[in-house]
Image (cartoon, rainbow, N blue to C red; front, side):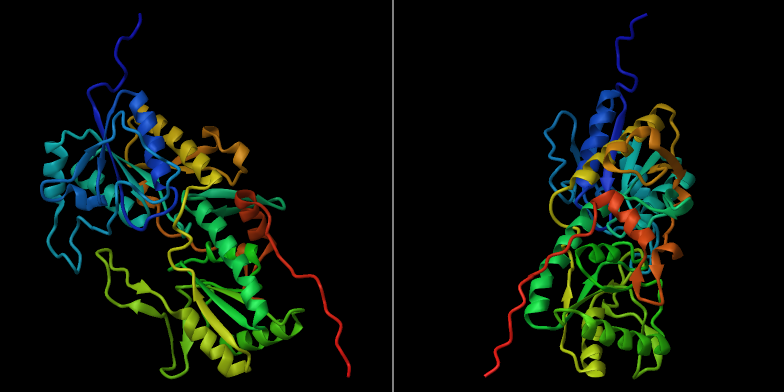
Length: 410
């Protein structure tokens, strides 16, 4: 018998994005919207993350509207709003969320975010019964997605999150462009890269020519700092152009000679609603100490928001589409409290739904770099990491001015 109506006709699905922006959020929104529309849902967009469900709500209708998924960032806007009690907002705002959920007659909520945004969604699902599906998002690539990377006969527990591929490619290009300035002044350049607790993104600077890298997973004790400065000087002096690029994660734990303790450098110690301070400035500290300890001129450069800005790159575009296919499966089975993930690290051509699965949103958490990806003795990413990232953004790139001029002797 022919079915006249679509499966979920008369139902409403809402989408929100929270936390930091990435180049892939609009693509995620568009892909989820398109697939849910085909199932019959009316699609709402919640503006400014969880903030859009407070007060009277801030909701827009995405049904049958033009949407540019290639444009980076999020047209729904974002915030770091936590609906549950926090130090900044001790009162619970869950009743406001629930009132607007009923007021706007939302049947299913899809939350695009990291551990904080999706963690709040999972809590609402468990405590209030809200039907939610999480969707991964971070340029830091530090969510536990249980994505396996096959390398030399070994399975490594890795991660692939929308936003990371575009950011990694952007940071590779950012680092590559600094090579000419670094060589022109025969100096050391310390590039600071986002990464509060993990160095996944920092590794992409190696693909742009960085020769040394520091990550949060490798705590820089007093002894390790001494060894680091020796390694930096040796690497610089042995370089053909007397130039060196060092990539450092913003969350690197660094020994402070004055206080005698291991510290992190903050741009501001004021915390957001999820308890996170704002990092920034470790590159300046390291560059200054390199000059002081080695006598070699060093400069700091903060990549800042550059990696998370700009258009959605090709791999991210297909990755968001593939994970949105899995969202369809979860919707059809009404399997809520889940987040779609990739089962394995695969090249662009193999980004298909059969390589996906889903995990419980309560098991997301933060994922550090596997020990197989970073060599603490040489302050460098390993061949295993190179293989991992090459699958996503291609092989490392390099540039070189090849002419060597003869010396004039009077």
